[in-house]
Image 1 (tube, rainbow, N blue to C red):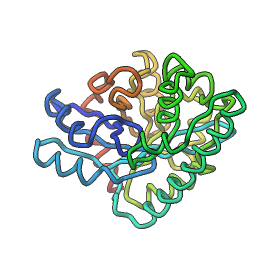
Image 2: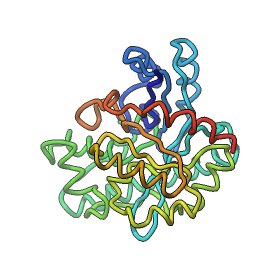
Image 3: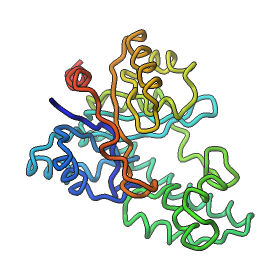
Length: 272
């Protein structure tokens, strides 16, 4: 029976594991299929795909994009993309450049609260990958301003928090368009964490083709609700742990297994 986790992050964005380490974990935990879905970058995919060949794990190319609608940040996963797409990579380059400015703006906002951080420490922690709030929260904690990265995130960096700065003004339609053009499936990520269920039918109208019903923070009842909603709206069902290695306090890989009956329709859907 195939086991799949279609939402994973590596050290190329805000995860702590290398692409190879993710594949090795998949092999050890009997996952046959995974998707690497780093934020705003596909740079880790060649290494993940190569490791997948070595260890017998199917690696689906993916990416996670932050979009906005009605003042809310909505994450869209591009699943099964052609990661060599010129249009996709041009958009990702722009998004990464904006993220650098976003970090600098958040650092400037933090000074108003007596939190003095060198942005270069944030970029160094990212190690050449995509820098973001997770890295900044860790630097704040290491500097002694909070008791944990989670506290730093909650006090300063949460959505609409005092030092929050939107990563981009990317609209859902634009994300859907570039993912679809790259032969991928636009997936609404972690709807239970979004708290905007009333907007899901609208997102589907805008081109979202799958709902991430199975997710690490979803309860059983939530997952079943989103499965039923997907059936009602005529979308596919996806699922993944959103593993970031140890960055979120515990490793989530293995906590979510997409039921196998939903995997083949997702893979078939790439060609439609």
